[in-house]
Length: 390
Image 1 (cartoon, rainbow, N blue to C red):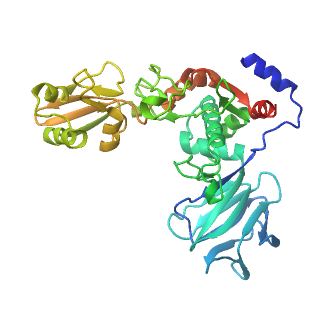
Image 2: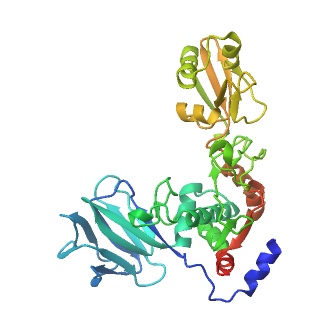
Image 3: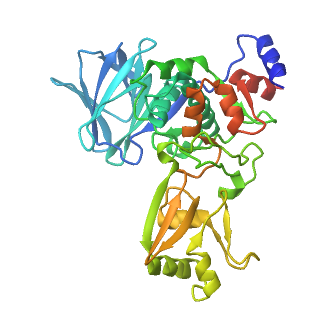
């Protein structure tokens, strides 16, 4: 299948490309500022108010943008420019960079590539970054993976982030943009700044996404650390997905997020099980089972009496107690109950710390992705366009 797709890609005309090269990202989502200061950090921009050109913005000029009585008010350090219902800030050349700083809340400045749309939102500003997808991916990779990993891992994360973004690009459509800048979508608080390998990893995988056997974009799930065992999709969520199958993974078991501990009193633990899961804590056999439990591998449900009557989903315990994962053992020590856990996150799909270790050992990014995702294909976006145009 991989050879067939490569052959098709080679035959495609240059005009066949995805129409989704620009994404609209809501900045400061759910924490919108009332006023921001913007300045061209590199290159220059033209500012449009209600569709008309009104200002040239470069590195020597500073523009204050404020929601004032339901309109967007602009002024420089020395003059008032005016109030408008819609502001557009468009780069004059490729690679231009905008510096953005709010005057309230977190005042740390941010840097973004490409263009902006600014609208009034109640008494605040709705700021939308219209960004080239590869600029966006590089910014997300730095936020999600940090700046100290090998380039091969950044290639892994680039493909995942690109796939996720395109597969969820209608998530905020009703709000006038496609994705937000929070964990709800993918963390995107700036362009990539810290490590040149992030940009290289993005560029070396440009346009590559993960698809299933029907050439549909996959749900590119990942977690920080799987604790040695990943999960099936239906173990955590409601649907079965062929490419999200559980595997044993020893690549992450020595990493920082592979182990955690949670302690509580015996009475608190038993009362939690009784009140939240209607568990028969006065039954001696059942009581002993929930005070001493050591799984050989990751279990999904806790079938304490082995006939399905007293069954608890581990994921529910994780959510209730805000644990790092749903994979743990239980030991009673005097009046204390100790939960010794493995992993960090839901455990479905790619294990980030496991993939980082594989990349450090020199394993290519495509092999890493095939290790964690079952029966998937890595294709260029133009391949998807080609098949969907049929």
